[in-house]
Image 1 (cartoon, helix red, strand yellow):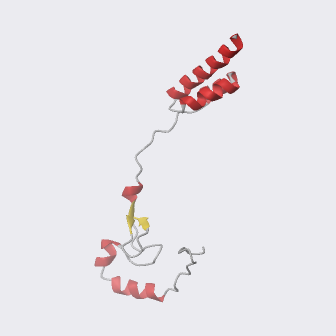
Image 2 (cartoon, helix red, strand yellow):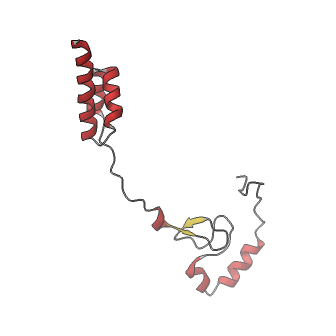
Image 3 (tube, rainbow, N blue to C red):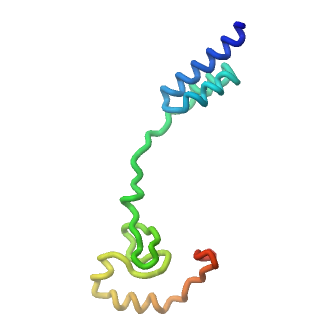
Length: 118
């Protein structure tokens, strides 16, 4: 009986340590019950879970008006369709020359799923 209490106590201690470090208490309780002192050593040695920072992806990406793919906000040419995007390029005095240069480029090969083979 004392053996079972010891392993359950290991599970509870592992869960408390894991919860204090921002990890899954239930998962570490089960690990503590299964592996006892070894799981407690791992729970004590593990680092705290990283704080979830708000994703900046929405702030760093914009949608291309031609192909509707996500590109970097600083991009002036879409990497997917090759067309000029953004206010900077639309108002630039050399826009016409850039468009002519882009037309000279060979078309991108696209497979049947809509992506390029490279």
